[in-house]
Image (cartoon, rainbow, N blue to C red; front, side):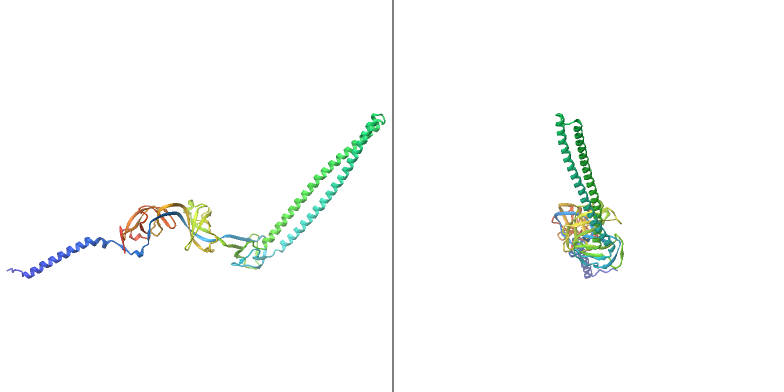
Amino acid sequence: MDRALDPAFVAAQKRRRVVAAAVLVTALFLAFSYGPSLLRPSVPRSRVRVEKVDRGPVEASVAASGTVTPDLEEVIASPVDARVTRILKRAGDPIKPGEAILDLDLSEQTVAFDKLERDVELKRNDQRRTRLDLQSRLADLDATTEAKRLEVESLRARLAQQTELAASGLVSKDGLREAQLNEAKAALELKRLLASRSIAEEMTKAQIDGMNLELATLESQRREARRVLDLGSTRVDRSSVVTWAVTEAGALVRRGEPLARLSDLKSFRIEATVSAVHGRSLRAGLQALVRIGKTDLRGEVSTVEPTVRDGVMRLWIRLAEPTHAVLRPSLKADVYIVTDRRADAVRVARGPFLTGEGSQDVFVVRDGVAARTRVDLGLIGYDAVEISRGVQPGDELIVSDMTNYLYARELKLK
């Protein structure tokens, strides 16, 4: 037979049910109130880089790898086949104008130069002697011509006298005829002498011109021999540094082979390599920024090599400050070639958040919460990125790599 439950037990059961219900209601309330914030992912603010959006210029650029090289490099080549007799300068040695790098055995070239010196002097002596001989011949012709002119004038005067006398019947016709013949003969001889002098003068000029050409040829050969001797002396005409030189005394060098290489370490330029993908946008005259450590140098593309090797193009940057103290030979540099520029754009500092061109998701920070926002990118520069839509100046943007958080709509910054 059933017995009635103890009232104390029943009361205890009711209290337990009420407490359980209260706990459940409280838990549901807390879940609805604080659940979203508890489930929202968070990231420490110290682990992300936040930059403020502002307005300013943006320069679109193509990145390249650069190397600092001397602006002036010179190769000294052997002008003849010769043997190295002595090494005077080695790689790394500074050299001043007038100093030699090494000595070559140029005894054969020296003998050839001395012979040409003598030939030139002999030719000049022959030229002087020939000129004097020709001037003497012309002087003789001038004297003979002058004497003949006087004779012609005398005979003409006599002919005039004979003509007057013949008109008076004082001279016979034979006498007048003889006077006419003598005058005509003397005039003909004078004409021949004048023609001879003109021919002799032309011959003199032609002969002297021919000797001048021979002398000019010899002098040209002498200058070339002098040039060979000067080049063979391996003397430099400017202050520089030897970057390479023949190292063995007694070595035989052929004509045209390099003897040494020199560099002027006071002025520099940048040799850059860039992917051939950007070849169409590269040309001489484009502005460039060269970044060496924390130093930025401005420059201009001076030359773009048209050939492509292994998918890479070479170009050279002429610096606005080629003597800057930070420049050193073979120093590596980051080069940014400016292909486009916008003077006033909504921009943010460039960072790892950038995944490409066009549109992408970024995190905009407002009131301690980073909200995922879709933005449109414009020009992409070496230090700033244009954002054409999605943010306004004054907004704060996370520019760190946020790839691992792109699933979240919001991030809490702790």
